Image (tube, rainbow, N blue to C red):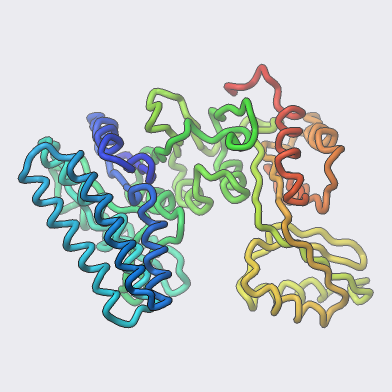
Amino acid sequence: MKIMKFGGTSVGSAERMRAVSDLIQDGESNIVVLSAMSGTTNALVQIAEKLYQNLNDDANALIDALHDKYKQVVEELYNTNEKKKQANELLSHHFDYIRAFTQDLFTIHEERAILAQGELLSTALFQFFLEENNISSVLLPALNFMKIDENEEPDAVYIARNLQTELEKYPNINLFVTQGYICRNAFGEIDNLKRGGSDYSASLIGAAADASEIQIWTDIDGMHNNDPRIVKNTYPIAELSFDEAAELAYFGAKILHPSSVLPAKQKNIPVRLLNTMQPDAKGTTITADSEGGKIKAVAAKDGITAIKIKSGRMLLAYGFLRSVFEVFERYKTPIDMITTSEVAVSLTIDNNKFLNEIVGELKEFGQVEVDQEQTIICVVGDFISERSGSALKIFKSLEEIPLRMISYGGSKNNISLLINTADKVNALTLLNDGIFERSTHNA
């Protein structure tokens, strides 16, 4: 069985849905995981914000606009009046449900229920289209098997058991459609895997189903060696290891959700990144293997804050770092990079929600300096080979760029550099020119 996940742009219009229906009919047994139609989740977030502010008239206007958009999709997608009627009745049901929240108290639980409507709509409309075209398939509600525990982590045992139960109901069906992103929490309430979570859904479902392959279909032909939105002459990487892909996803490559690599890695299931606009393109294949001694790609992560704690108490003090880390643990704030000297420790975070509280506690240990508007540049490959000269290439390429921090050695797959965000475009361009050989563009 194969998992095929399609993102918002891949199902963003009637035309794109038709293209997806062609791709999934390949004679194999497939579970198709769909995101919400492009723009839907953002619209639902805006609606929720208005409801939080008790701006119900504004919320209703946004709801009406989104409903109208879906009506147009229905008109374009179906050929028969019967299916158009069925689809419009479905829309009325979902949008009446959303409008009902303008009449009552709005909380985080209602927000999660609203955000789930995008995936529920896209999968139902797509299933109607398959039915209209006599394509044998079944819509599997993700809320029947996707679950997170009290720590907001996927309950892998529950997912595997209940997914199998759902599949066993249809022994003669080879094509299933389900929602990405949405799930239930430990209390049985509607919840989600956070933004970008449809990739995570696909990987979790693939692991639960012991899939032969997980395909992530987007609007770009694989993971590129650099950010194609910023740098000219980038190219897709044919092969990556799980660890290399995880580093790139975490440090800014938008094509893949960072969490989605681990379930596939644990089950050693290949992941392929493919392009719905160019389905014949090779894309990127992610497996356990890696080509050693080679720089593969560069990614950039914005919104970084650097914190430096300087204290004479660090010298020969074995408990100092533990005390510092405990501050971040108390505020559930992950650390991206860290460097140390005899009297100072510098680290970075990407979540400033509790920055003031964290800095306040850190001041108990010494002098604290905070630099915002920073960017982590992540250079990924297999740097285990001492003969590769990778570090020399990187630092020579960036000799014009002031480097705030350098992290090298914590992973054989990653050299991370902290720079001012204002220098990001220049840094990515310089790296593209300095470290990638033109003869290996399709490597």
